[in-house]
Length: 220
Image (cartoon, rainbow, N blue to C red; front, side, top):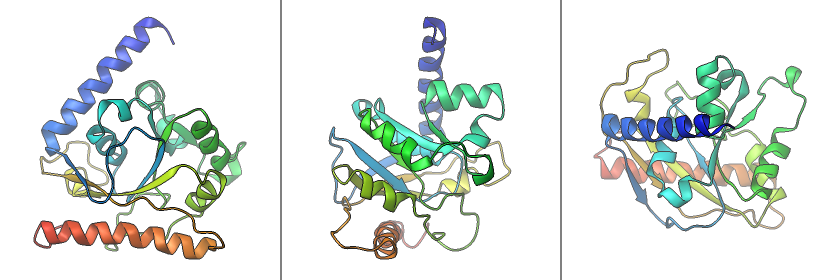
């Protein structure tokens, strides 16, 4: 990447961070984990294209620099601007969601990023949840990632209210207060099946959502 492009990416990253904070007044709640400088996989609920931006925004700068979102290549490679934001600004691990077009294994891509020392932001539902249920069923990627690199912490993250700030199909955000809650780290237990682990991972996110609802008097 050229020096000019790096400078432009740095400027864009800070502009996005400031904009996200101004629109959402987002704040982090560390509920059972701490913002430690260790390698992690942050797994979160997914309601908006802005989810990973909000999570990334609330991380301390040292953690932010080494944390990469895992995102759909079909969306972030669709235009030059999206490619710049996805690749140059956020250094996303871009995966092909359409199996028919896939020429690399998404789990292998994520493992490679971990082996390079990065932390990841993943959305186990696999797509944005625009329905009434709090979570869609998890895809199996989180289990395979936990199996491949058991030494990397898995931290559940509940992103609250962003679906109301930027609903599907809208491009102008509505200013509302958002929060990002980080729960206790999760690890794969020896002998635990895929379904058992994914059910426990889903439960950890729903517990965070319930805690958030309690704080906000039932709003979510």
